[in-house]
Image (cartoon, helix red, strand yellow):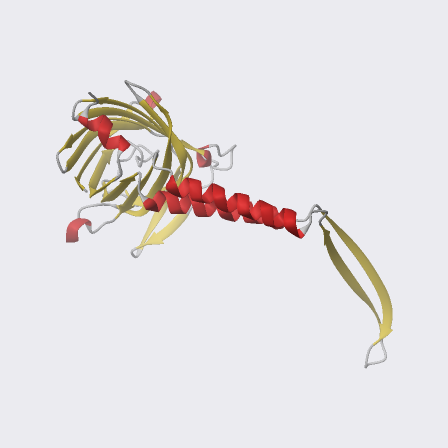
Length: 284
């Protein structure tokens, strides 16, 4: 018999809850002068309609764009001289852009239909999930929390075995957090590929999560000698632009209608900088 947690990944479900992060984890500062406390709300969907509609819509738009694109384009320029109303001679230049397509209307229609069928298949696919984190400095109406922003991931089941599940997808996010007691603003930007390695065991499961952040491949664009400052809430702060590729290892419990999780995470293990993450939510 499959474990309770394993079955939870196979059936549609929704989890609404809260999260808290601290220490030098995903949103830890790289300046070594402290780290923000990141609090927020979390929504997770498995096998539902939100991720299916979003991914299916993106697939259809890409397919429709490809179907309507021309096979070739050309640019031609012509000019002539004329006399304006002041008696002056001026040159008028005209640039003409031409797009040609060898595909017939029937072929373009067939490409659109194929994109539509593919989108329907993705919408009906039930082996996908959606993670949304919204971070706030007013957590449950209090002043607890130093961050604002969001982070979302769309995930698809890549492999399902008897002992583990592998997921991958795409995601993006933008979070800014103030280091307590310091005029430092941690700015985290994320566009990349999330990967999840999940091992279910009874009502529990262990998860290793890595977010491959393309923004972390700055190729020298984030120079150390360039210091940016920004005014936040009337204070001038130094911007700490972090682009982490975080590793999070967590233990999760799916107990009836509750989903509890606690784990450790790091974006700079070589510096000994680690943080913690905890979430709690209600399952529907």
